[in-house]
Image: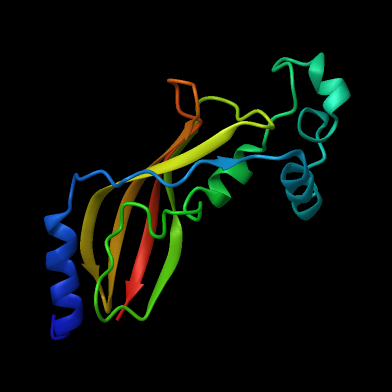
Length: 157
């Protein structure tokens, strides 16, 4: 490889393969956050932004956009780099994409969510390391997760 920091990081990451992280702190999904996401993404569907109409809808309340859940799952409080251990010498982590994204349970407004991560793979990709981390978003008080997805991150050294 030729880059000692990258070699050391790869060793650290490989030691953690299959290990689950501690969960993030619980984080409440508010109507204001859902409305802000709707404004930013132009997705104003009534099941998200119209609480009165949503009460009579299929979920009995407004729900968060699946894409909102996906967007914040890696950044919830108390979970810096969920499932991804800190590695020395890393300059930057780049979101390279997502694998196998599934929205399995809607997140109702007022619900609290948290994320757990599990390191799936780490391998060299040119001058970077590619890390795949399985992320699971849990909903407080429910057995079925809101979302399970594999985050693909490229680490720059």
